Amino acid sequence: MIEVEQLHKSFGSKIAVEQVSFSARDGEITGLLGPNGAGKTTTLRMLYTLLRPDRGHIRVDGFDSMLQPLQVQRCLGVLPDARGLYKRLTARENIHYFAQLHAMDPAMIERRTTALTAALAMQDIIDRRVEGFSQGERVKTAIARALVHDPRNVVLDEPSNGLDVMSTRNLREFLRQLKSEGRCVLFSTHIMQEVAALCDRIVIIASGRVVADGTPESLRELAHESSLEEAFVKIIGAAALETLT
Amino acid sequence: MKAALTIFIKECRESLRDKRVLLNALLIGPLIGPLLFVVILRATIGRELDRAERPLPVVVIGAERAPNLVEALRQQGMLVLPPVANVEAAVRAQRVPLALRISDSFAEDWSAGRTAQVDIIYDSSHREGGTQLTRLRGMLLSYSRRTSAMRLVVRGLSPEVGTPLIIGDRDQATPQARAALLFAMLPYFLILTSFLGGMWLAIDSTAGERERQSLEPLLANPVPRAQILLGKLCAAAAFSFTSLTLGLMAFALAARFLPTQRLEMSLNLGPGLVAIILPLMIPLVLLIVVTQMVVSAFAKTYREAQTYLGLLQLLPVIPSVLLSLMPISPQLWMYAIPLIGQQLILMGLLRGESIATHVFLLTTLMTLLVLIIVFLLARKIYQSERLAVNA
Image 1 (spheres, one colour):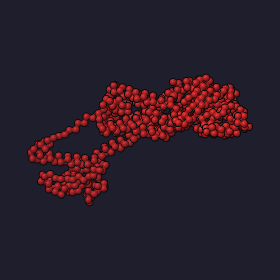
Image 2 (cartoon, one colour; image 1 turned 90 degrees about the vertical axis):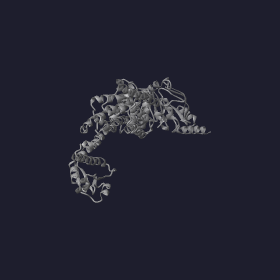
Image 3 (cartoon, one colour; image 1 turned 180 degrees about the vertical axis):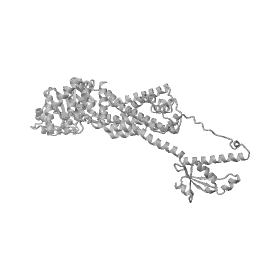
Image 4 (cartoon, chains in turn orange, yellow; image 1 turned 30 degrees about the horizontal axis):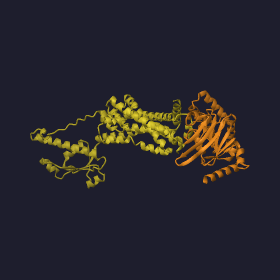
C-alpha cells in the first residue's frame, strides 16, 4: 500500500511536482499516466527516497519515507528510470548483489533467484555476463534484481521503454502475476494503451499536478468519451488550459 | 557493516574483470616508475663512467711546437686529432668537440722558462662539452704542476715553494646519501603509483556508475549512504595499496640492476625498509583515494572526472620540485603536512637515516586527521540529492 499526500518538490525556481496526492492499493495495478516532463519520475524518485520532498508525506505500508527511509526501501521493489546493470557481472551476480544489500540469507537468495529466473524465463541468460544483453534481457535482469527481496510493493518507472512487442506482452503478463499475488503495483508511463490494458486505477499527472484519478471507466465517463485515449487527450487539454489561465 | 563488505567485494570483483583497470592499476602504474628509473639512470651512470675512461678526442693545432706536452697528454688519454681549417667555426658548428691551440711562441717561451700559452677552444652551450673541458683542463694543469716542480728542483728549491696551498676533498656523504640524491624522485614515483592505483575505482564508483545509470538503483537499496561510501573507498584503497606494494617491489628489484657500486653508492631497499614504508603510506593512500572520490563525485561524466584527477595527480609534484630546487633542511612543522611529511620521511629512509618515532607519529596522525575531515565531506556529498540525480 502506497499513500502519497500533498507532495511538493521544486528544483530552484522550477516547480516539478505540486500538491500530488494519490494512493496505490494492494492487489491492484495503478498507472501513473502523463506526458513527458509531467513530474512522474520526480514523484517516483521521492517515493523510493532518492529525492526529499519539500512538503507532503509518503507512506509505504505505513512507514513514513522521511522518518523511516530504510524501512520504506525494504518494502519497495524499484525499477528506476535509470536501470544500469553491472556489465562485467553475470545476471545472477547482479541479482545476488542487490539481494546481499538487502541482507538476505544465502538460502533465501537462491530460492528467490530460482523463482524469478523461472517467472521471467531467464534460464538461458542467468549465468551470462550482462555485456551484450539485448534491451529485453536487460529489463528482465533489472526487474529480477528489483524484486529479489520479495517486496510487497513494486514501483516501475516506464518499464516498457525500448521493449519490442513480445517483450512488452511478457512484461504485462508478469505485472498481472504480481497483482494476483496480492502485491501493490505502481508504474508510470506516457503510453495510453499500456494503462488501458493493465490498470485498475489511473492517476493522470500534467505539469506536476494530479488532474484526474479513478478507474478507466470513471475517467471515460468524466470526459464523456467512449475511448480512453480521447478521454486522456481531453483531460490533459483541459489541464493545460487551466494552467494557462 | 555487512553492506559495506558486500560493496567492497563486488567492486573488487568487477574491477578485476576489467582489463583496463588491471593494466593501469596493477601493471603500468607500478612498473612505469621503476622502468623509467632503470633506463634513465643506467644511461646516465653508464655515460659518466665511460666518459672518464674513454679517450678524449681533441683537435690539436701546432702540435709540432710542443711535442713533449702532446705526448704527456696522450699518455693521460687524449686522442690527438689532426688540425682543421678555421677551428673556431668548426667548434661552433659542433663538427669538432674540443680543440687545443698551442701558441706560435710556445717553444721559444718554454725553453726560456717563461709562461707559455695554450688555448682551449670550446662551446659551453654544447651539452657534452662540460665534462670534456674539465678533463682537458685537468690534464693541462697536472702537466703544468709537474713541470713547475721539476724546474724548482733544478734550481735547488723544494717543490713545496711553488705550492703554498693544497686542497683535499673530504666528502662526508655516505654511499647511501649519495644514492639518495640520485633517487630523489623515488618518493614522488611511489606517491604517483598510489594515485594511479586507486584512480580508476574512484572514478568508476561515482561518476562511472552515474554515467552507466547504475547509481540510482544502487541507492534505492536499504543501505546507509556512509556504508556505500565506505565499501567503495576500501575497494579503491585496496587497489591503490596493491599498486604501491608492487611498485615498491619493482623498485627494489630495479635497484639491483643499477651499477650503483661503481659510483660508490648503495640503494638499500630491503624488506626492513619496505616494512616501514608500507605502514607509513596507509593513511596517505586512504587520503588520496577519498580525495579522488570527492573530486569525481563532482564530475558529471567519466571523462570529466578523469580530467580533474589528472590535475590532482600533479599536486604531489609541487613538494618534490620545491624540495629538490631549494635544499632547505626539513623543519619539524613540515612533517605535519600530509604528502610533504611522507616525502621527507621517505627521503630520510632512503638516505639511510633512522626516523624518530615522534616524527613518524606526527605525520601519521596529521594525515589521519585530514583523512577524517575529507571523509566527512565525502559522506555529506553522498547524502545529498545531487549525487544520483544531477547528471
